[in-house]
Image (tube, rainbow, N blue to C red; front, side):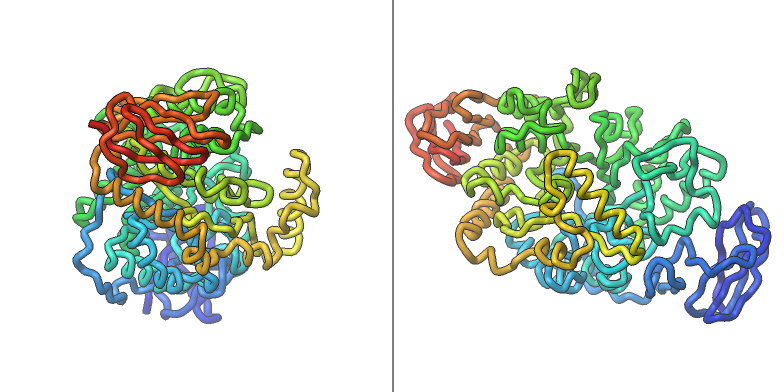
Length: 577
């Protein structure tokens, strides 16, 4: 016999259905709203007040997809091969964002694990997996996931994820998992049938908010925190990336993020492993990553779109949408971000039509993730075009140099390291025809408002959209991809061997630049990271001290006393002295 329990506070009758047979559950004493009981083991579902069978909200496995029956998982049965892994802290690390379904043609955990040697040779420290909770169909980004305790079966299910983590740890790589707490997908979300998991007190871009502060929210918070801890405990994940935390509407005195961070820290003590949380937030509020004993929420780090936007505008010249704030003087903007963390630190944002942000503490540069490309910044473009589709290898190399020698915690997006020629487009596999058509039309309507022809916007439901978004592993051995890959490996090696190049103290960073001639030099102790983003003639770039030696050069670079003659679309890391 197996024990079953479920929170269904509004139900008068709760049954568990196991392999077609129904068994009544009883109210659990001292646990308002909870029902419990025993029944035979097997695939199961719950029926509320005689209604249809529904998957367990805490289901650890959905073998037939989000709408099918649930299945128990014995987490203790998995044989972990690497018992020596004790984790590693986030400061000083480099992350690599990876989508399981398009990292390899097979699109599984096992296939991705076979490519981990590439990441070891590259020199990154953590693999950051995009969301892996179940969603309809086979293909998707993962942000429409449901069943927040389960793993997408087409990727390999719970056992596949454990094998991936085990292999990564054995090779010295940590694993970060992207989780979504701010909404659930539009298909397969059965939580509202069980209780007040959502509330109309707040509204989000996805509709009613997850209930973090209305009646019943204690259990909803416990549900989300329990899911987060299960990834870290049962799957031995090392850290979690929290999607769009600015959409977690919570008016309680103890914010959900602070409560979650407290519980994660408690688990870290219990497991004797460093565990951490990284937020995606557009608030530019240092409170998110300020330690709790200093009055903050205590998360380890947060994504920095300001650094991305500043770097993107300097490299591409784009100025539409939210890039407008950064494009007026992109080199000055980039200099500010490199020395002060955020561009929007309390000043006016023309894109928002109001002031935005607060100053960032200069000693905490490692608490900001810096990146040149991400799944969002590529996939949310109409064609899902990477920077490599429009920029020369030299300019990509310059962007990489500024990311990988920055005072921030760097993150790469899969394939970036060789300038992948494949796009990364928005794709779905909704099994509901009406929802599929709504997504297709909505995507095309959105970009039609920005001048795109509908037929030019890829169909999210088309298998071809997934196919063209899958990495081509033949590219890294070909030029110009091989040269760019060698450049990334060199920069990562320099970051590991020269502490000044990963010093997180923003106050120690100096930046010189020329907006008109389009060069910029970052001072990192005795080292200089110089880039020329012009496309005409070589130009002299001042070092501010006598040149000593070149550590890395992409393009053309000739030292001349206290300056470099740097060619167009070139980058160099040199030592002065």
